[in-house]
Length: 512
Image (cartoon, rainbow, N blue to C red; front, side, top):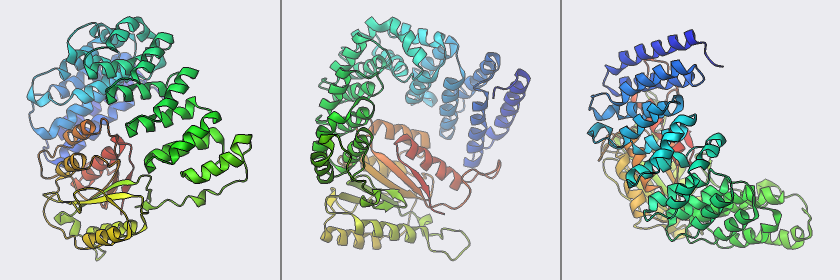
């Protein structure tokens, strides 16, 4: 419900007052409480333009604040995102671009968040400014402006974007890979034969990032035979993530006639891609079988090819193992487990309950024992430093499972929490991994950076062509949403793990 002007003005005034009160507290609780206050500005999204303009002016002060403390970077990130949600005047588009291109040390690293905010801006005025920017030759400026256009989901913005179609078609052939990929993403928002042809052509590009942009853009285009056939062709792409995106796109663009091609891929794909194919087959065929080639092939040969559904198959026939109640839908697994000193504490403080590490080890041992021999896995304990069970992923055969269980049982607790370090090593050392389970009980406290938004930014960069899902498990007691003034480092740890999971398509689970 939209607020009346007087109500909106009171809400904004109250938020400003409480933010300035909390910002003087430079401990983690004060920084987090100030951010929580800022987030309440979302309640003004449907307010009168004049109120939203005043809110953006306040947020501008937060972004450009001369405070250099690294811990307040999250305020800047939050304020940038809120401007994207509230603004509809050109001046705010100009401001966000200026922030992204600033050389001020405290503003560096905001490019990702600015690009996302540009994609949320409403109305024609900001869009026209972005379309003017794509006429420039500066590559960094093009990447930023095109990234904003590619993220615009409002169909009305796609219609307006058509005015720049000739330039976008030109940029889809640009020498710079990042310009090309973002231009393809923008073209995906525009209806019409020329835009569709350019996106289809991008799926044949030699650069993976451009083909990925093409596959994703096709997924949200209008249904067309050429789109369907292109997505079907991408089921054989050399990059697993592109094959997965193609399978997802075919849920909207495919038909039951594609079932034999989808079923054939079940024989050769890793589990995560098989799950994507399985979900598409269920939607297109109206029947359910496990994500395995044999059952689907037998069904197609006997019933599906004759236009029949056959007898019902209970879903229970596909008994997926789970880790902390999260279904394991991958066979390229990395288990990251926090072994810092605090993991030796009781899960419920001031009680005689088992320690957080004991519970985490027991759950990890349980899941290792039920992995099948096709799964590949590794284990990375971390505290102040990082270690690993094996130098590469190991197939979960009986001897390997036994050795892994022995390794887990020997783990002890000591040191601090180097979240940045373990995530860096995970992405750098294990390129096969497509799913991570991350168990921890605390905020990052040591490493190259302990600033949560900086870590999230780097994960987004590392994950660009991997799309690794990170399921986070917080071994933390306490309320998820504490009352004002009661925020603790444990709540901040849950915040970090919730966002890390959300940003990577994973799930957040709390052990309490």
